[in-house]
Image 1: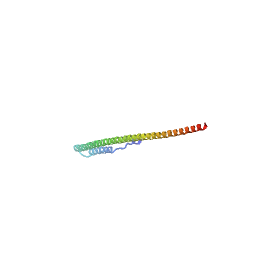
Image 2 (image 1 turned 60 degrees about the horizontal axis):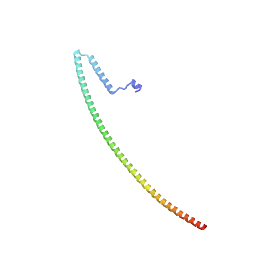
Image 3 (image 1 turned 30 degrees about the horizontal axis):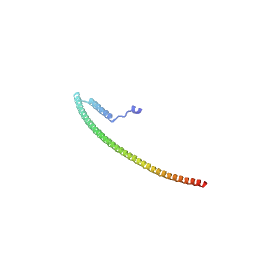
Image 4 (image 1 turned 90 degrees about the vertical axis):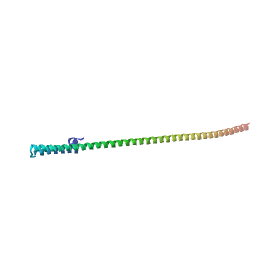
Length: 160
């Protein structure tokens, strides 16, 4: 609260109503006391007025009590309903998360299996190509060595 709010607090409606009621009672008492009646009549009027005020106060207190009880029951019911709704929503959300995580796990397993299969196929292909290439190289080496041997033989025969 700032300084102005501290120095000049705002009066609530209930405070104003209390002041109005107390002022009315004091005004009524003053009017009765200054009215030109005898003491016995004055006491009788005061007693009647006090009985009326007392009865009305009891009625107002009863109505306030009933309304407060009803309001408390409504708040309790709504709070219970809201707690049930939150609990159900939490349960639904949890099952959705479990289901989604299970689906993701299955997809990861499938992807890992696919990668493994692709790697195996690629390894077999590379092995077959290496085998074919080495066979071709072996044939080329054999052919070249035979040609070299022939040339050497031909050169040695021609030099004799």
